[in-house]
Length: 358
Image 1 (cartoon, rainbow, N blue to C red):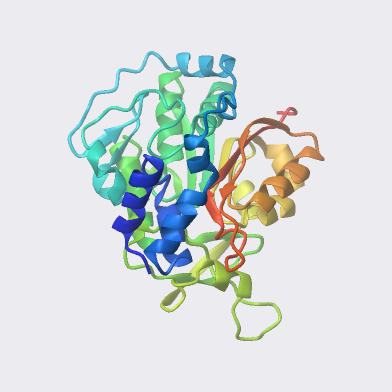
Image 2: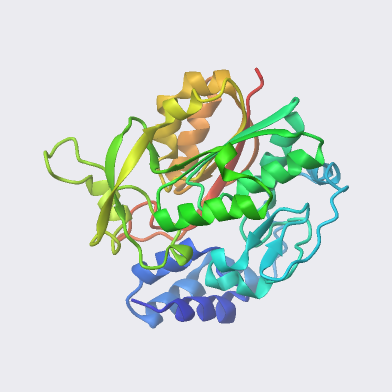
């Protein structure tokens, strides 16, 4: 398996940039056994070929228009201050550097500019989904983050809501990894949010409640792309093959985690201004199982998609009941016969859906 530094320096030398995320680094580590294979994949990539091309193909697909950027102006009253040990967002939310992956440690003490075309953890479209949900909130801000990690969108949403004069803030976060769950609690405290006043669940989300296995990764801070390994319905004591393939390389040391039904979480509040879902490939099955209830209770849905197939499946699913796709960027991937669809992914897709009925 390639080392983390081999992946990072390959990106720097060939593509002239940092890898998009720790998930991508992990993906490449498990996809290539030799540095020569990885180097060839970079040289063969569309991104590198475009760097060589003298043909003007027009501006890159951003997932938003110039007019959309006026949303950021609604939060221009923020006066974020730099703080040692933290990276601070343009509007004042912040993350403890020691909670973040190794590749962003150089951001210690910095205040980030507006995330256009993105920042260290998200592209502009994802930020627009969050901020539009805050602007749509009426008197209170209610948000859910599934696959929360350290809860960046809960923290950023609460800070944005306070800037809009909203003090009634209700948050729900679900994160299965116990180490990252502790970082979630810490991150809320770092953003002046009392975790005890909100619903935080150390568990995973599924269509139905129950139990599952969870990989015990040695360094959760640098390995965020984990999902539960469920019981196979076809085998009394077997595990789901699709989940095992997705977690290849991390399935040797497993612990038990609770699975909380998505429907149960949705019923916790009569109305959600924002639901953010990033659960490593099971987003469509969750939404499909709860679509009617989602249409009754969610104003804005922001979803990270983890394969090109999931991009299309989610669009078809949400289009049918009348949701409006306000922003999206498709999943980027490198085709491989030896990888699952999700494992081909090099950068997650993002979709921002607005419910026209709420």
